[in-house]
Length: 215
Image (tube, rainbow, N blue to C red; front, side, top):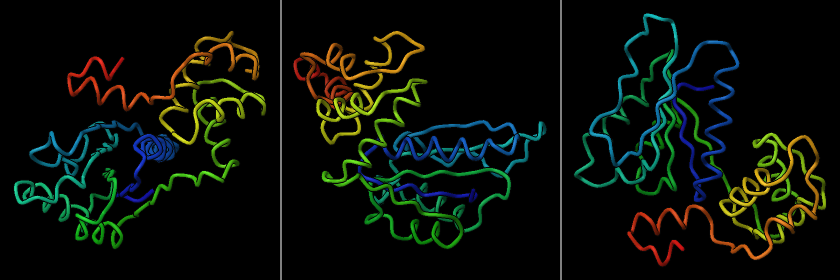
């Protein structure tokens, strides 16, 4: 695992899953790891990553939305992150998440030179196998198994939207008895009459104080 990582992708849920996989890989060496998560818009300065822990643990700072740091008002924080990315701490880890790098080319270049840039692509609509694997992974994340027909049924209801898929898988997993494989009948019973609006769209409507849209 590099000490600085830039995860780039248009879908926030797929980027979050990539971050989760990377954090899990970091923890495999047994070193206690403290993960701190921030939105770039809420930071005035990069959290300290250069002070060694007295307990011998590791700090991992995740900063989402770094593409928003392109403006002049955010220049101090952007330059601080750029300088850190060019010379990262050898123990701790910085994970940056952006929808794109078109507005932060210097930062992207620094990460590519001294760390790793990961592009998280949304599967093509015709790539049914990748969408089905995504659904299977979501069930596994919930500690459940689903048969192939159930996976196909979820895809039929949710469509090619990772947020909707995650929401429906979570609902189905919670609503069905634990300890058995989820079937297509389970999917149909739980999703009958449900809409296809993702949890992210609902959250955005709530943030806009638009209860009608959220409902």
